[in-house]
Amino acid sequence: MDFNVKKLASDAGVFFTRAVQYTEEKLGQAEKTELDAHLENLIARADCTKNWTEKIFRQTEVLLQPNPIDQTGARIEEFFYEKLDRKIPSRTTNAELLGQYMQDAAKEFGPGTPYGSTLITVGEFQKRLGGAERDFLHTSAINFLTPLRNFLEGDWKTISKERRLLENRRLDLDVCKARLKKAKSAEAKAAAEHELRVAQTEFDRQAEVTRLLLEGISSTHVNHLRCLHEFVEAQAAYYVQCHKHMQDLQKELSSANGDTFPNAFAVNASTSGVSTGSSPHSIATLPGPSSPSHPPNPSNALESSTLKIEEVKPPATGTRKAKVLYDYDAADSSELSLLSDELITVYTVPGMDPDWLIGERGNQKGKVPVTYLELLS
Image 1: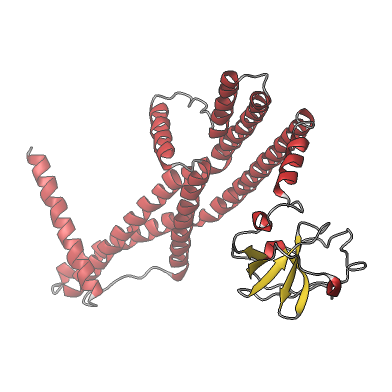
Image 2: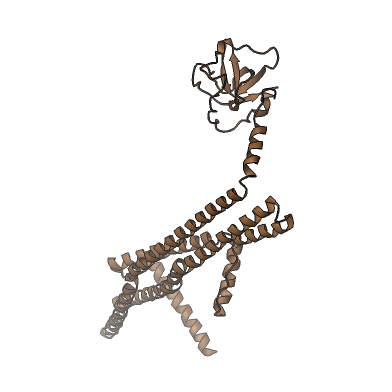
């Protein structure tokens, strides 16, 4: 108990002395031994390496484990397995879990139905994507994350320990220098000089040890460079696998549903168009942030080569007002240029392409694209 009390008192005394010494150095009231420029540069480079390595390490962890909750759970699990000196089990990836859900759903919906059979196929490829992702995560953890972690938790801790020891040696040296200056008698000066020589020797020795460790940062950069190349190679291989899996999936779906999807698309396309008897308002688009692309010019009886706009007469009934949504520049003399927000009169004529209407503005008349209009009631 006496030993602990004495040690506590001694540590408190050293802490107070150091605090006073730091304060006097800041105020310029105490001498401070400066490190040589080369050592200072090495320290600055080491700090830079540590800070950026830590940021890259943390962000790579986020990239490989984007869900913070999953990431926390994974770290805790890894911690326990490391302490038990056991191999960490392989985890199911999100893509693999999605694939399993799809295949389970197919069993409920009926694997013989078009939807069920497609779910089975897509689910299988999702599992393949998940397997590729798991291999990528495993490779990246070994070849990239582990070396960075080893540096931060191993080499850097050693460097930090030696740097703290160097700082203590510097403070001891400065105390000895101040003591020598204050010595009055010859005996006190001799004792102070001896302490100064010992302190200088210890400081120089510690500075050399620290310098050698800091110069090892260059080899750390070389090692991390190699690891970075391996990480990029693993990432490239992963994306190549994903691309191949998705191409194979598209081919399989195309061959399996070749008779189903084209018919469905044809039905959708036919129902979305406008017949000569339907209301033009059904195909008008809603306002949007950007203008639509120009619709193709009609290749029917109303092409510019045969259509004479001046001969087109509005029907007795069926004309409507339309608000122009976007500016439109006429492609030829058969079309009417438009300005956004203006109101024009529009109508259709038998045999006219459903993507176009006849528009009138005063004495001007011409074809206008329906997608540029909002038909009003």
